[in-house]
Length: 140
Image 1: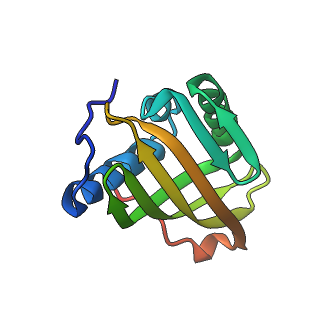
Image 2: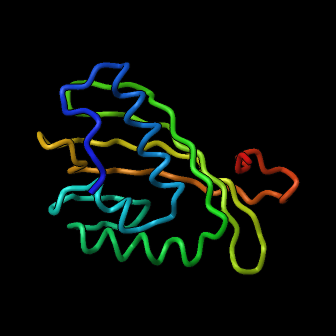
């Protein structure tokens, strides 16, 4: 279980820290670790997929990282209000054929009183890029 850094209502300062800690979890590509950020009854809209509950989220994440290789995620807080955060995301990944993509999007997260994300709504677009155009490189 990932410790809850902050509970709602959020301030801009602790929301910023929470977003960066969440990005670190996503960069682990550990589906179980990321799924722990969400409530058991969490609802997602991820592009054209609608997910309900932690079990569906876990399966989705496992499949995601089987396809999206060398995944690197960055998130920046856009704004916060009480138990809600608006996030701007950017991530890069390649497929099994070695083609690279940069994905851009916006996400809305709503937290429950236990500090778990109960709603996640993501709108994301993919841009094919060359490996030489990558900018989200792993730090040594």
